[in-house]
Length: 277
Image (cartoon, rainbow, N blue to C red; front, top):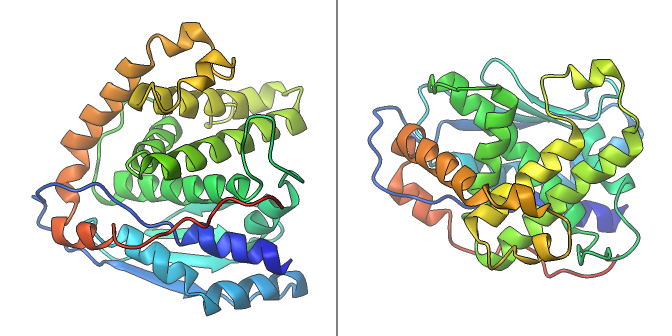
């Protein structure tokens, strides 16, 4: 369990933002954090290790360059057995159960696609944190969303992830896609109610994130197509899809970034070296 916690700590240590001039009048550094003491004994080591390594403080640093009109709280808490993370009423909650589930679903060794075990934790945890932060941005900044909000939140999360260096972006994106595809295998076949969910199906979310990545950098992610992980027919339009996301982010979200604070967030090495489990 100790090695798993170390990987989780490293994943929350990921900090970045792409920056330009900030135009919004709201304040940056509007993020507070809280570690709730778990009652479940199995969650206590997670609590202690994450607090020791100031994990939420690092997540706070990631979000703080955005200018928010009110304080956003980020909380690590138990969720009555629900392996989840969510945003509600100016608060992002990351569940101990969700972190535990990521560890349990980690592959025993590097996958045939070259995805290291630790990246199957780092990728989805980082993606989920950014996904919920996107919901917070939409709500707190009154960002208009055309289409399903869950899809838009996935797009914002992937876009920010792709602003990392090439190696980091590659690991995060493929780790996230692995998590979605693994969920698709575990939940197949889907019920009609699952198709009615506000989220896309796990397989759809996997292909969407791979498409955004390929559209952003066809050279870095070109093997996703050549090896059949992303269908060629879908890949044809991925550069246009990424351009649409970029245009929306530039127009609606980037003006709320504090340039100086975001530049500070770029300092440091945040990803551990990939190793086999």
